Image (cartoon, rainbow, N blue to C red; front, side, top):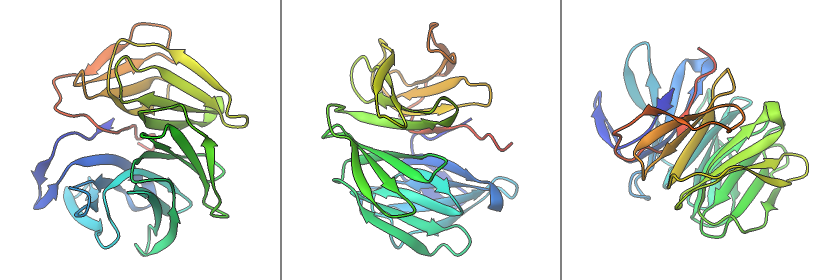
Length: 240
């Protein structure tokens, strides 16, 4: 279970407001979006075997936030657009304007459709990596939407919110029909992920914790990690 929080100094590479992390299984490395101060962002690569950090991309990184991998391409939501980088060559192979600078987390379904939320307008955008088509999949009403997760097994997109008493919501991947899975007393949810057993994990900046929820979101969540600074996106490595 990988969690990104406050900045630190690691192996000569500066983590400057790291936001998201994914695992590139083919290359045996983690990729991290280094948000920076918007204009000085970067994407870092971390080799867990050698304990070495390196720059994956700096030339196109403008406030990188969400990350998703599909068909050997790393997709990055960055200040109103989505970039895609070939994982072998690091060359940019995808570039689409999507919404405003407030797009945040990024997730992808098995058909290669990307989903990203726009926190100021409450819109969720759907972007085809095949055709490049951009659509407003959810046209509004989801102000402060933050963490997103394609839950392919249950054919739904999960969403959490950076606001007081954040609900946990689901949207049918075929119909976009919305439902509320749980109401909570926790605030400023940021990231959401799921493990191999169907247990969900959600990070809260207000609570400075990571919570564990059962597969049906029925029981009181457990505290998995606490006393964090500003926990951001969260990722479970199902490959290991």
